[in-house]
Length: 151
Image 1 (cartoon, helix red, strand yellow):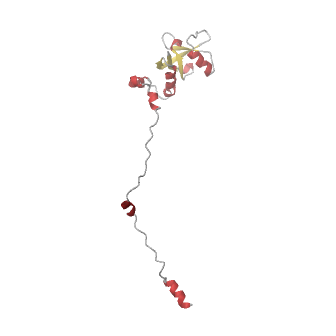
Image 2 (image 1 turned 60 degrees about the horizontal axis):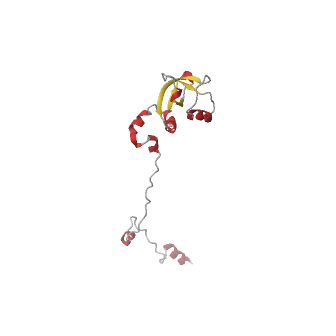
Image 3 (image 1 turned 60 degrees about the vertical axis):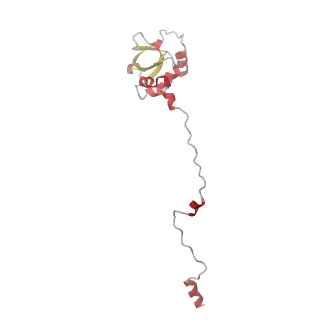
């Protein structure tokens, strides 16, 4: 079983996932493995047969935020725990429907494409805009007449 815990400031502070077996009996302290790389820490975390020895550091736990048998489920709660401390309520609300985080990542539904249909001929003849004035190019303008007079 895995726990998402917040460590006390005197132990370095921060959030981490630990095995529940790493807690002391009163669950106010937890043992921390002597590793500095994240990959080796994850191997130690996932190894059920890990033996706690005197090289492990004892850290004060401020509070336990979330517990689960599924490591991936606890890992998904870690980013959310950085902003809120109420992780248990979403689990109780969801119940048998599944994880609340999975509901956020559903595939989007595509909207049907809008297609323009051809309209009847009556609609094509009527326009919302007024008809522009027509230019009469056959008539001579007054300027042209004056020019003819002087020539």
